[in-house]
Length: 338
Image 1 (cartoon, rainbow, N blue to C red):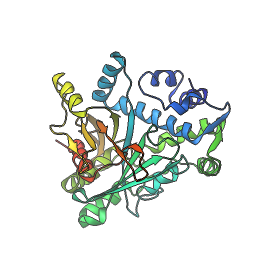
Image 2 (tube, rainbow, N blue to C red):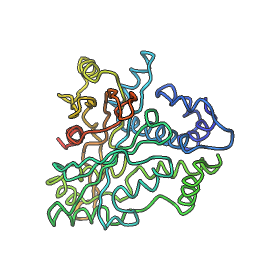
Image 3 (tube, rainbow, N blue to C red):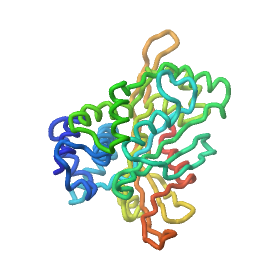
Image 4 (cartoon, rainbow, N blue to C red):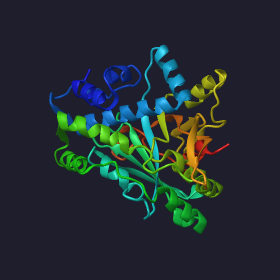
Protein backbone atom coordinates (compact mmCIF):
# COMPACT_ATOMS: atom_id res chain seq x y z
CA UNK A 1 0.00 0.00 0.00
CA UNK A 2 1.29 3.44 -0.96
CA UNK A 3 1.54 5.29 2.36
CA UNK A 4 0.90 8.66 0.71
CA UNK A 5 -2.33 7.40 -0.88
CA UNK A 6 -3.31 5.92 2.45
CA UNK A 7 -2.85 9.26 4.23
CA UNK A 8 -4.57 11.26 1.49
CA UNK A 9 -7.65 9.06 1.35
CA UNK A 10 -7.90 8.95 5.12
CA UNK A 11 -7.96 12.77 5.08
CA UNK A 12 -10.62 12.88 2.38
CA UNK A 13 -12.77 9.82 3.09
CA UNK A 14 -11.99 8.57 6.58
CA UNK A 15 -9.93 5.88 8.26
CA UNK A 16 -9.49 2.69 6.28
CA UNK A 17 -10.79 4.21 3.06
CA UNK A 18 -7.65 3.55 1.05
CA UNK A 19 -7.54 -0.14 1.90
CA UNK A 20 -11.22 -0.50 1.10
CA UNK A 21 -10.91 1.34 -2.21
CA UNK A 22 -7.92 -0.68 -3.44
CA UNK A 23 -10.08 -3.79 -3.13
CA UNK A 24 -12.49 -2.16 -5.61
CA UNK A 25 -10.17 -0.39 -8.04
CA UNK A 26 -6.99 -1.10 -9.95
CA UNK A 27 -4.24 1.30 -8.85
CA UNK A 28 -1.60 2.44 -11.39
CA UNK A 29 1.66 0.46 -11.17
CA UNK A 30 3.54 3.72 -10.56
CA UNK A 31 1.79 3.96 -7.19
CA UNK A 32 3.69 0.92 -5.92
CA UNK A 33 6.45 3.21 -4.70
CA UNK A 34 6.40 6.57 -2.98
CA UNK A 35 8.62 9.08 -1.21
CA UNK A 36 7.70 9.46 2.44
CA UNK A 37 6.39 12.92 3.21
CA UNK A 38 6.30 14.14 -0.41
CA UNK A 39 3.16 13.71 -2.53
CA UNK A 40 3.56 13.80 -6.31
CA UNK A 41 0.93 15.31 -8.56
CA UNK A 42 0.19 11.81 -9.87
CA UNK A 43 -0.49 10.53 -6.35
CA UNK A 44 -2.74 13.48 -5.58
CA UNK A 45 -4.60 13.02 -8.88
CA UNK A 46 -5.07 9.32 -8.16
CA UNK A 47 -6.32 10.03 -4.65
CA UNK A 48 -8.80 12.59 -5.98
CA UNK A 49 -10.07 10.10 -8.54
CA UNK A 50 -10.49 7.39 -5.93
CA UNK A 51 -12.34 9.72 -3.56
CA UNK A 52 -14.69 10.89 -6.34
CA UNK A 53 -15.28 7.30 -7.46
CA UNK A 54 -16.21 6.35 -3.89
CA UNK A 55 -18.60 9.29 -3.72
CA UNK A 56 -20.32 8.25 -6.93
CA UNK A 57 -20.84 4.70 -5.65
CA UNK A 58 -22.62 6.16 -2.61
CA UNK A 59 -25.06 7.99 -4.92
CA UNK A 60 -25.49 5.27 -7.57
CA UNK A 61 -26.81 1.99 -6.11
CA UNK A 62 -26.76 0.27 -9.51
CA UNK A 63 -23.08 1.06 -9.97
CA UNK A 64 -22.31 -0.04 -6.43
CA UNK A 65 -24.04 -3.38 -6.99
CA UNK A 66 -22.08 -3.95 -10.22
CA UNK A 67 -18.79 -3.08 -8.49
CA UNK A 68 -19.54 -5.45 -5.64
CA UNK A 69 -20.19 -8.20 -8.20
CA UNK A 70 -16.79 -7.54 -9.81
CA UNK A 71 -15.02 -7.77 -6.46
CA UNK A 72 -16.96 -10.87 -5.46
CA UNK A 73 -15.70 -12.55 -8.63
CA UNK A 74 -12.10 -11.65 -7.77
CA UNK A 75 -11.73 -8.62 -10.03
CA UNK A 76 -11.28 -4.87 -9.72
CA UNK A 77 -12.68 -1.93 -11.63
CA UNK A 78 -10.35 -0.05 -13.98
CA UNK A 79 -11.48 3.55 -13.56
CA UNK A 80 -11.26 4.99 -17.08
CA UNK A 81 -12.75 8.46 -16.69
CA UNK A 82 -15.09 10.59 -14.68
CA UNK A 83 -17.42 13.13 -16.30
CA UNK A 84 -18.82 16.40 -15.04
CA UNK A 85 -20.99 19.17 -16.47
CA UNK A 86 -20.44 22.92 -16.25
CA UNK A 87 -22.16 26.07 -17.54
CA UNK A 88 -20.18 28.57 -19.61
CA UNK A 89 -22.04 31.67 -18.46
CA UNK A 90 -20.86 35.02 -17.09
CA UNK A 91 -23.33 34.84 -14.22
CA UNK A 92 -21.97 31.98 -12.10
CA UNK A 93 -21.57 33.83 -8.82
CA UNK A 94 -18.11 33.34 -7.32
CA UNK A 95 -17.30 30.41 -9.63
CA UNK A 96 -15.27 30.86 -12.82
CA UNK A 97 -17.53 30.15 -15.80
CA UNK A 98 -17.64 26.73 -17.39
CA UNK A 99 -14.70 24.38 -17.37
CA UNK A 100 -12.38 27.13 -16.07
CA UNK A 101 -13.63 26.21 -12.60
CA UNK A 102 -11.91 22.84 -13.08
CA UNK A 103 -8.95 23.46 -15.38
CA UNK A 104 -7.48 25.55 -12.53
CA UNK A 105 -7.47 22.28 -10.56
CA UNK A 106 -6.67 19.75 -13.28
CA UNK A 107 -3.62 21.51 -14.74
CA UNK A 108 -1.67 21.65 -11.46
CA UNK A 109 -2.56 17.98 -10.93
CA UNK A 110 -0.75 17.14 -14.18
CA UNK A 111 -3.67 16.99 -16.61
CA UNK A 112 -3.54 18.36 -20.13
CA UNK A 113 -6.16 18.77 -22.85
CA UNK A 114 -6.46 15.53 -24.82
CA UNK A 115 -9.40 16.27 -27.14
CA UNK A 116 -12.27 18.66 -27.88
CA UNK A 117 -15.70 17.37 -28.89
CA UNK A 118 -18.50 19.62 -30.20
CA UNK A 119 -21.79 18.28 -28.83
CA UNK A 120 -23.94 20.46 -31.05
CA UNK A 121 -27.16 18.46 -30.73
CA UNK A 122 -27.29 19.26 -27.01
CA UNK A 123 -25.61 22.69 -27.35
CA UNK A 124 -22.55 21.73 -25.32
CA UNK A 125 -18.81 21.29 -25.82
CA UNK A 126 -16.91 18.40 -24.25
CA UNK A 127 -13.18 18.28 -23.52
CA UNK A 128 -11.11 15.39 -22.24
CA UNK A 129 -8.08 15.77 -19.98
CA UNK A 130 -5.44 13.05 -19.66
CA UNK A 131 -2.65 12.83 -17.09
CA UNK A 132 0.85 13.54 -18.34
CA UNK A 133 2.58 11.03 -16.05
CA UNK A 134 0.42 7.94 -16.62
CA UNK A 135 -2.25 8.66 -19.26
CA UNK A 136 -3.34 5.03 -19.67
CA UNK A 137 -3.53 4.33 -15.94
CA UNK A 138 -4.76 7.49 -14.18
CA UNK A 139 -8.41 8.18 -14.98
CA UNK A 140 -9.19 10.97 -17.43
CA UNK A 141 -11.68 13.76 -16.84
CA UNK A 142 -14.38 14.53 -19.41
CA UNK A 143 -15.54 18.09 -18.74
CA UNK A 144 -18.49 19.46 -20.68
CA UNK A 145 -19.74 23.04 -20.96
CA UNK A 146 -23.32 24.03 -21.71
CA UNK A 147 -23.82 27.20 -23.80
CA UNK A 148 -26.92 29.10 -22.55
CA UNK A 149 -26.58 31.73 -25.30
CA UNK A 150 -27.79 29.08 -27.77
CA UNK A 151 -31.12 28.81 -25.93
CA UNK A 152 -34.12 31.11 -25.39
CA UNK A 153 -34.10 34.26 -23.27
CA UNK A 154 -36.39 32.59 -20.72
CA UNK A 155 -33.93 29.70 -20.50
CA UNK A 156 -31.01 32.09 -19.99
CA UNK A 157 -32.88 33.90 -17.20
CA UNK A 158 -33.53 30.57 -15.48
CA UNK A 159 -29.84 29.65 -15.76
CA UNK A 160 -28.87 32.94 -14.07
CA UNK A 161 -31.48 32.38 -11.38
CA UNK A 162 -30.10 28.91 -10.63
CA UNK A 163 -26.32 29.43 -10.74
CA UNK A 164 -26.01 33.20 -10.30
CA UNK A 165 -25.17 33.00 -6.59
CA UNK A 166 -22.82 30.00 -6.74
CA UNK A 167 -20.09 29.87 -4.12
CA UNK A 168 -16.45 28.94 -4.73
CA UNK A 169 -15.19 26.16 -2.44
CA UNK A 170 -11.58 26.74 -3.52
CA UNK A 171 -10.04 28.78 -0.70
CA UNK A 172 -7.12 31.23 -1.14
CA UNK A 173 -4.88 28.77 0.70
CA UNK A 174 -5.93 25.99 -1.67
CA UNK A 175 -5.14 28.24 -4.66
CA UNK A 176 -1.65 28.78 -3.22
CA UNK A 177 -1.14 25.03 -2.76
CA UNK A 178 -2.21 24.43 -6.37
CA UNK A 179 0.27 27.04 -7.59
CA UNK A 180 3.02 25.28 -5.65
CA UNK A 181 1.92 21.94 -7.04
CA UNK A 182 2.00 23.28 -10.61
CA UNK A 183 5.49 24.67 -10.05
CA UNK A 184 7.06 21.68 -8.29
CA UNK A 185 4.82 18.75 -9.40
CA UNK A 186 4.72 17.78 -5.70
CA UNK A 187 3.54 18.97 -2.30
CA UNK A 188 4.49 18.19 1.29
CA UNK A 189 2.23 15.44 2.62
CA UNK A 190 0.57 17.64 5.24
CA UNK A 191 -0.37 20.28 2.66
CA UNK A 192 -1.63 17.66 0.20
CA UNK A 193 -3.80 16.12 2.94
CA UNK A 194 -5.30 19.54 3.66
CA UNK A 195 -5.84 20.30 -0.03
CA UNK A 196 -7.54 17.07 -1.11
CA UNK A 197 -10.81 17.46 0.88
CA UNK A 198 -11.17 20.97 -0.58
CA UNK A 199 -10.71 19.62 -4.11
CA UNK A 200 -13.32 16.92 -3.47
CA UNK A 201 -15.82 19.62 -2.40
CA UNK A 202 -15.35 21.37 -5.76
CA UNK A 203 -17.07 18.39 -7.41
CA UNK A 204 -20.48 19.13 -5.91
CA UNK A 205 -23.38 21.54 -6.30
CA UNK A 206 -22.26 25.07 -5.46
CA UNK A 207 -25.66 26.76 -5.67
CA UNK A 208 -28.73 26.55 -3.45
CA UNK A 209 -31.81 24.46 -4.17
CA UNK A 210 -33.29 25.70 -7.47
CA UNK A 211 -36.74 27.17 -7.89
CA UNK A 212 -39.11 24.54 -9.24
CA UNK A 213 -40.31 26.99 -11.90
CA UNK A 214 -36.73 27.51 -13.09
CA UNK A 215 -36.11 23.77 -13.20
CA UNK A 216 -39.22 23.23 -15.33
CA UNK A 217 -38.14 26.02 -17.71
CA UNK A 218 -34.71 24.46 -18.09
CA UNK A 219 -36.09 20.96 -18.54
CA UNK A 220 -38.25 22.12 -21.46
CA UNK A 221 -35.13 22.98 -23.49
CA UNK A 222 -32.23 21.00 -21.99
CA UNK A 223 -32.27 17.87 -19.86
CA UNK A 224 -28.55 18.48 -19.29
CA UNK A 225 -29.03 21.95 -17.77
CA UNK A 226 -31.93 20.66 -15.68
CA UNK A 227 -29.54 18.00 -14.36
CA UNK A 228 -26.96 20.67 -13.48
CA UNK A 229 -29.67 22.58 -11.61
CA UNK A 230 -30.13 19.70 -9.15
CA UNK A 231 -26.71 17.99 -9.18
CA UNK A 232 -24.30 20.81 -9.98
CA UNK A 233 -20.71 19.80 -10.77
CA UNK A 234 -20.91 16.35 -9.18
CA UNK A 235 -19.55 13.44 -11.19
CA UNK A 236 -22.20 12.88 -13.83
CA UNK A 237 -20.83 9.37 -14.28
CA UNK A 238 -17.82 7.19 -13.61
CA UNK A 239 -16.65 4.57 -16.08
CA UNK A 240 -15.22 1.07 -15.82
CA UNK A 241 -12.82 0.16 -18.64
CA UNK A 242 -13.70 -3.38 -19.69
CA UNK A 243 -12.48 -5.70 -22.44
CA UNK A 244 -15.91 -6.37 -24.00
CA UNK A 245 -18.73 -3.86 -23.56
CA UNK A 246 -21.21 -6.08 -25.40
CA UNK A 247 -20.56 -9.01 -23.05
CA UNK A 248 -20.90 -6.77 -20.00
CA UNK A 249 -24.18 -5.35 -21.29
CA UNK A 250 -25.57 -8.83 -21.93
CA UNK A 251 -24.50 -10.02 -18.47
CA UNK A 252 -26.10 -7.03 -16.72
CA UNK A 253 -29.27 -7.45 -18.75
CA UNK A 254 -29.42 -11.11 -17.73
CA UNK A 255 -29.23 -9.99 -14.08
CA UNK A 256 -32.30 -7.84 -14.65
CA UNK A 257 -30.47 -4.51 -14.43
CA UNK A 258 -31.62 -1.77 -16.80
CA UNK A 259 -28.91 -0.87 -19.29
CA UNK A 260 -28.76 1.16 -22.48
CA UNK A 261 -30.39 -0.72 -25.36
CA UNK A 262 -27.53 -0.10 -27.78
CA UNK A 263 -23.76 0.22 -27.52
CA UNK A 264 -22.28 3.49 -28.78
CA UNK A 265 -19.41 2.88 -31.22
CA UNK A 266 -17.00 5.65 -32.24
CA UNK A 267 -16.36 6.58 -35.87
CA UNK A 268 -12.94 4.90 -35.58
CA UNK A 269 -14.57 1.72 -34.27
CA UNK A 270 -12.03 1.61 -31.44
CA UNK A 271 -14.08 3.12 -28.59
CA UNK A 272 -17.31 1.42 -27.48
CA UNK A 273 -19.52 2.65 -24.63
CA UNK A 274 -22.74 1.80 -22.85
CA UNK A 275 -24.24 2.63 -19.46
CA UNK A 276 -26.89 2.08 -16.86
CA UNK A 277 -29.64 4.74 -16.85
CA UNK A 278 -29.18 7.30 -14.09
CA UNK A 279 -30.39 6.22 -10.68
CA UNK A 280 -33.28 8.34 -9.41
CA UNK A 281 -32.76 10.70 -6.47
CA UNK A 282 -35.02 12.94 -4.40
CA UNK A 283 -34.09 16.63 -4.50
CA UNK A 284 -35.42 19.74 -2.78
CA UNK A 285 -36.85 22.62 -4.83
CA UNK A 286 -38.19 26.02 -3.82
CA UNK A 287 -41.81 26.72 -4.72
CA UNK A 288 -43.04 30.20 -5.69
CA UNK A 289 -44.36 30.79 -2.16
CA UNK A 290 -40.94 30.00 -0.66
CA UNK A 291 -41.83 26.57 0.68
CA UNK A 292 -39.72 23.51 -0.05
CA UNK A 293 -41.01 20.72 -2.25
CA UNK A 294 -39.37 17.43 -3.20
CA UNK A 295 -39.27 15.81 -6.60
CA UNK A 296 -37.67 12.63 -7.93
CA UNK A 297 -35.13 13.44 -10.66
CA UNK A 298 -32.28 11.67 -12.49
CA UNK A 299 -29.04 11.49 -10.52
CA UNK A 300 -25.65 10.16 -11.63
CA UNK A 301 -24.95 6.91 -13.45
CA UNK A 302 -22.33 4.25 -14.18
CA UNK A 303 -20.78 3.67 -17.58
CA UNK A 304 -18.71 1.01 -19.34
CA UNK A 305 -16.09 1.59 -22.02
CA UNK A 306 -13.84 -0.62 -24.15
CA UNK A 307 -10.76 0.89 -25.80
CA UNK A 308 -8.80 -0.78 -28.59
CA UNK A 309 -5.16 -0.13 -29.41
CA UNK A 310 -3.79 1.40 -32.61
CA UNK A 311 -0.43 2.24 -34.15
CA UNK A 312 0.51 5.91 -33.71
CA UNK A 313 2.58 8.11 -36.03
CA UNK A 314 5.80 6.87 -34.43
CA UNK A 315 4.92 3.21 -34.97
CA UNK A 316 4.06 2.50 -31.34
CA UNK A 317 1.06 0.44 -30.26
CA UNK A 318 -0.97 2.64 -27.91
CA UNK A 319 -4.39 2.57 -26.28
CA UNK A 320 -6.94 4.85 -27.94
CA UNK A 321 -7.66 7.36 -25.16
CA UNK A 322 -9.93 9.45 -27.34
CA UNK A 323 -13.67 10.01 -27.14
CA UNK A 324 -16.36 10.51 -29.77
CA UNK A 325 -18.94 13.29 -29.97
CA UNK A 326 -21.66 10.89 -31.13
CA UNK A 327 -20.90 8.45 -28.33
CA UNK A 328 -20.93 11.23 -25.73
CA UNK A 329 -24.24 12.64 -26.94
CA UNK A 330 -25.82 9.19 -26.74
CA UNK A 331 -24.41 8.50 -23.28
CA UNK A 332 -25.59 11.87 -21.97
CA UNK A 333 -29.18 10.73 -22.58
CA UNK A 334 -28.81 8.44 -19.55
CA UNK A 335 -29.77 11.43 -17.35
CA UNK A 336 -32.81 12.50 -19.37
CA UNK A 337 -35.82 12.83 -17.10
CA UNK A 338 -38.46 10.13 -17.54
